[in-house]
Image (cartoon, rainbow, N blue to C red; front, side):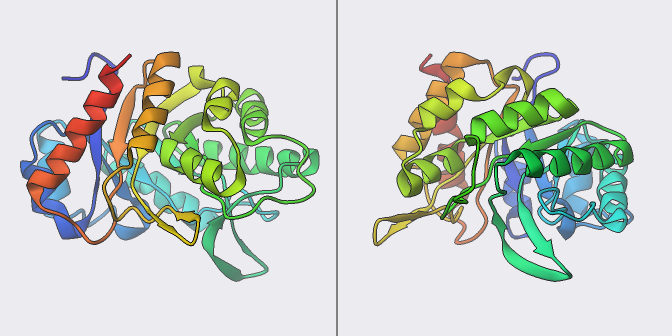
Length: 270
């Protein structure tokens, strides 16, 4: 069981596996995609979990703090309402570019890691923090490319953003693996540079390789290499929580339970 103030090991709640999540042993907390729930009409399964005392974290995918435009007040209001309805300990989102000029990118794209971008994003983060009733954590994204004008590594950029705004970190070790395979960015070097003292929790997920490119699909068993990165993270900090993401092609209850066991095993290697 998780200790006081700790989230433990969890799984992403999805409507397709709501009953599975309810009956899986050892689920200490869950995360729900904020855009998929209405705070006034929470799914019965989430109400069951909340009644058991299972923490539920709303995880946004569309806020777009990485854009030049300020965060949409309606999206912020929705995240805040979800946090209140779920009695959430925090809200998480992505450090990503998702739209500009009213056009949606359709992906969580990396932000240009420049001083100018940092200034704009820090202000966007402050606006989001002011609108939310609980702390905000930002997630590092998987990338298929890097911006040629980058002035900082991702770890440096996130470190300065944390220092400037006080925002928390959601470290996705599967995304670190994706960037290692696709961009040659060493995951261990990223871990050494990230301000892990501000870690809120961790994401773990599987994916697929196609023509030498790793795709972070959240539709497969977690590769051993991703679990190795998790172990490396645990050697540096005791993570408050580690959560398995699985978004489609759902396996059996037993298979999901086994994945949670593999995560616990990777955490215990330290």
